[in-house]
Amino acid sequence: MGGQVAKHCSACHRGPVADDIIETNSAILTDEQSCGSKLLLPSRRCNSNWERLHDDTIVNLFSPAWCDGCGALLVGVLQQSRRCRVCKRLACEHCATNNPCFARSLLSFVVEGSKEMPAAIRVLCMDMALIHGLASEHPEVLEYSAEELWRNPAFLRGLVKLADGSESTSYRKKVAERLSLCKKSEREVAVEVLSAMVQEDLPLTFAIELLQPLAEGNPKAFATVKESLKHGSPLVRTAAVKAAAELAQLRGFKCSSALCSRIRDTDAGVRCAATSILPTLELEERTKMGAWMACLQDGDATVRKTACKALVQCGGIEVEARSRSVMVNILLDKDQEVRAEAWSALLAFKTTALTGILVSLARSRLDDITRKRLVQTLRGLLTLGDPKEVQVVASSLTGASWWLRLAMCESFCQHLDASNAEVRAICVSAVDSLADRTDNKAAAAVAAKLQDSDAKVANAAWAAIRKRLGDADPDVNRVWLEEVHCNHLNPSVRGEVIGAVLNNLTETSWLIQMAATRALELKQPAESREVLEILMKFKEDDDPAVQQIAEDVLEHFLLLGRESAEGIDLEPDSICKSLSSTSF
Ligand SMILES: [Zn+2]
Ligand SMILES: [Zn+2]
View 1 (tube, rainbow, N blue to C red):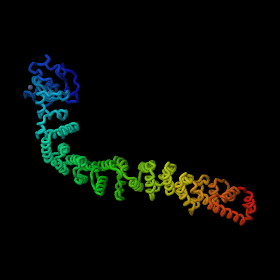
View 2: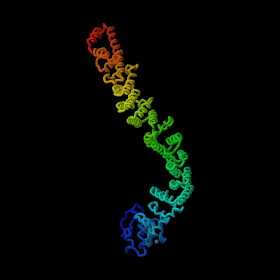
View 3: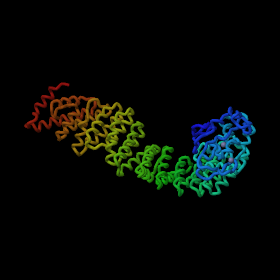
View 4: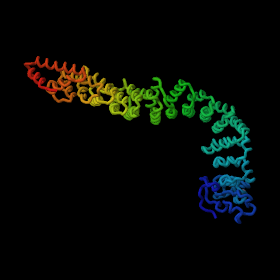
């Protein structure tokens, strides 16, 4: 009555279990109902609800093997033996139909659960070999393991060795959990056994892992962990770093400097572990920074990557100029993954440090992607709209590379309309210091801010323009003048702006004169009637300074008119006439 076999444990319904399975008799004798049915031989009838038969499959053996029941050589070429999928025992055809399977019995109890533990199962829970055999695949068995087993050094040793043969984290977790439930005396035995195992110089990392939760109230456990930081095996040192770091962080054990020294370990794995726990260490700022720099400059790419990842966990990092170059180097790391992590790590730095690093980076030879990223990061800081941050970015750009200044000038232009007046004022000054002196677009953007509702912003804009208006290069003077519009000025700058524009009407350069008339929103040349009319209007202005300048400029034109009385352009009389006929 055999059948096609699904490859999973028939006791706990978990799979898969590996073997060369051909057919099984599990369909006949699996559940309680069939226990004691007429299918079973009388001698094998269950005496407990939990008793199970072996879950046999027929296997092909390709090397000599013997029956675990009677010791007979298993003969034949194919299908010569039965192996239990749970306890793995091999049996000849005769032995296969005898003897209950203790492993399956125990597992059934564990999986199905029952408040009361039958005596037969209790006996199984004391069986060291049985528990060892089941524990790595079915760690839940450990919950039921008898208390006295945990007093047995051989049992503990077996468990540690099992862990180092498998990757299963649930097994490791279960062992640690069960151990923590033990009484103090048993835990002390465990510390002794585990410490001894570590000192035997075997690479048993699980012993260290188990010692960590035992360290509470047991100085020996902590001492062993700490000593293991210098263990001969790198695997053990790595495990010790992790364990000691957690003890230091969660329980306040003192081992920060011992841990920090692992950053200079000969093994990259240990250095990685030490690097990743660096943010948790309580160290002097200087020592810590030195450690960071060592990690970031490590010869191993994994360590450098870990260092960048760990940096993210810190916040508000400030860097000295010396360390700045280390960060620049790691942003240009030859390993792509390290570079990616380094860029994310930048978030951990204070804005001043961050901008400093980026501006230094901009001086290196960069590819387009890096340049883009650099500018994007700086722009990101502006987008936050925090005046302090914006100011830091603006200040950092003094003396930056030309291409960065250009790119950032554009960004500051985009923030000239920020909702925060302080930000607007900073942006105006930034554009002024970053823009090319003949940049029309920047000039227009700054000049528009003369109309800003906030006096601070308008003043900043005026300060920027005033500087250019006096420039020795007439082109610079003209470009900025062209962008000034005298209507709707902020009252705090109105007088000065109009005064300056009027003064420029008398400039010898025709282009500048034209720019000045355009600033007055006029289309005519400087000495036209339209201009004279507006000068007359300003002569009556509320601002005495404007009055004075308007008068001076008018006088200048009249004088000019008289001097060129015989000239082609204007008759002095016509000027006088035009002036007197104008009524304001
Ligand atoms: Zn079995
Ligand atoms: Zn046999």
